[in-house]
Image 1: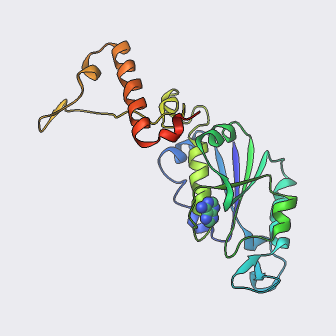
Image 2: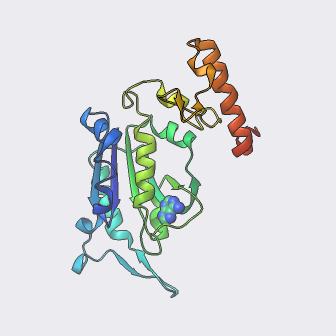
Length: 225
Ligand code: ADE
């Protein structure tokens, strides 16, 4: 999968993909992430990319021309399955969306800044608008990093143990069960006997029961449908 990210603050996106699983995904050739500086595409003096909003009001708006130049330049190289705009008024990003996006080949992500981007870009180019939660970040970059991480780890072959993503929280509308490691007795706090039984049936049953219990207690809304 290839993901192109368009931003006015490319430095914000250096570290999130340079370590751990995202780094390995790129080294294995399973994921290619390209970050583009919007200012490289503007025809305006002083690398201007934003301007005052029509109608007045505080806050600048990202101009259409630099965005269209960036988008069309990338589109001339390959076709994109989705052009995603990160915005707090977008559709809530959830595991199901991550699963769906992980099967795509080419994604483009636009990061908004200031008051947002000119509405005409949303109307004529953007195919998917995503929010990572009901709070406002100072730009779309951190939200884009969240989406790329959640999607990237689901690409087949990225996680060492192919099955491990299957047991993540939310993957089957259940939160993940508790996990333990050595020692089996730490300060007198013991690991549940079932996990030490060595019997896969007993272990699976315990995990399912705990996942259900945890979901009922913390996120009953997940069990509603
Ligand atoms: N940009 C600013 N806030 C955001 C949010 N909550 N989700 C996605 N993009 C954003």
